[in-house]
Image (cartoon, rainbow over all chains, first blue to last red; front, side):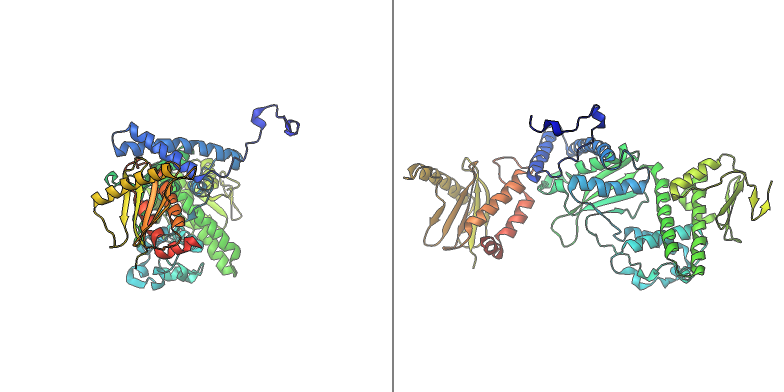
Length: 395
Length: 141
């Protein structure tokens, strides 16, 4: 009973802070426990697919609890609601707690390359083979990712027709974008083929460290357990996804890497696009802060409004992101016209005002401003009926 | 000039569960290697009984004109032994290291059945790394 008086007494057990927990666990003990888990499940199943499913289910239960615990312990009971937020929560917080290290955000070139392909479809001079050679080298950095997202947002949301025009705007050093397709270190990256796929790539997954798969087991991967954890976290956070673990052979290496593929359910897809856009917007804001001349600054502002406009259009009409290209009007860079069957909407952007009109009856202005706040992170103020525009009274 | 001729791992009942050749000298076919393993198992047990010293754990080193045989016995009765060129150094350290590899990549593998022949890819990879000569010298330092 020594020291019992020193412990603060809590009348309610719920007031007691959650302990930090022991940060270290013996790797051997864990390996034996995991091995035992696999062996037990092996006795319960007839085939390998079933074994994989059972391991995933075991992981799912862990994931659901991990999310609850970490939200409570690290985030003051707040839960991520954005796609990029939850993904970064997985690769940093969850991975750190479970495996003692955070993952890099991988650019691995895949995202960068995809964006560039998308962009090059749009740019006439790129189609004509003016793509700088320098774009094929090196390792992309955070700046590149940003630039690319800005690029994409800009291209989709505005009416820039050529690469030269974009370069003239001199927003960011385009020549520095150098996509690279070689696999980077343990990382989380976006899939190349589908918009809604993300990959966690690990050289050696902790659970696989001591495990050699028998030849007759085919593509079975004990990483299914980790995939289950990821699915548990995402599912419980409200981002339904299918998560699978695969071995991916790497050239020049004896052991294959393990890739955990996250495929989000359809409804998450648009949200993902929004997050990209908002990242692009944030990058634009950042560029704005560092812009030198006033002309440069005004260009960035123009781009920003264009992008945010297209963003609000997407959230308003629940568009598919690819519709955006046809949105912007041809005569005026700040006027956006959206037509879809009988629906017409006009959006006029003037510095920091947005005027919005149309015959679409289902949209509601509160909803737009809220979704804009949600996506862009800045509040649209003074929302309501138009009463005054450029000093001219309207009624 | 190979320093290590071959490596054996025998389970607690004397069955050979792992055998690997590292040089052309002293190569044996499957039957011979099985025989040698069970012979060594019995000799090891007998030496334990006959030893004048109390608490003897069995033969650790057998020196012959053409080879040395270093043996390591784990607490559970699994024996690992290497046949090497006479006078090869640092074999105890190597055996300990191999035992570590055995516990890591064999015992922690859910698809390995106890007392059965070892077929684990990771064990093979790490073992061949450990056997490389410079590695042996490194362990001794």
